[in-house]
Image (cartoon, rainbow, N blue to C red):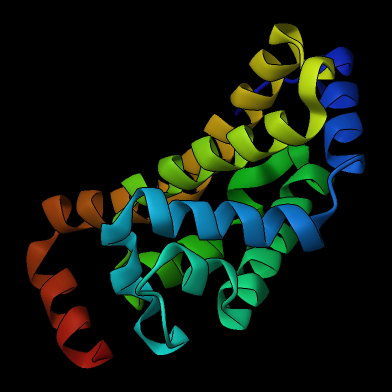
Length: 168
């Protein structure tokens, strides 16, 4: 469990309170899809993602970016237990969507870049350090069910394989 100081909680809440998720979410997800084109494979149902202009103008990309930021809002509001907050979302990404968990780090980094660009000089190194700590906790929580599955498999592979066979 991560220990948050009052100053860290205040900083994270202050940063997030200034974020317009309707703007930042689409910008961040669009940037991920452009800068890291292999991530496009998870968004095959989103239509045209063939060019940067198509990605940034794609309403499904924009909508999902808002969803991502909505999920991040839950972490800000539940800083005392981000792991439990993201348990179901992590399970979905691990077991149904099969998203490479390194993509959560990529998204966190890009989201930080977008926020820094929006805030300019007010996004000081001290604020960034606190924000990055928060994002690392979110990334770890999003990846948590991947590693639980690996540990379960190592402890009882026959049960995991049987469960996997019946879950598809």
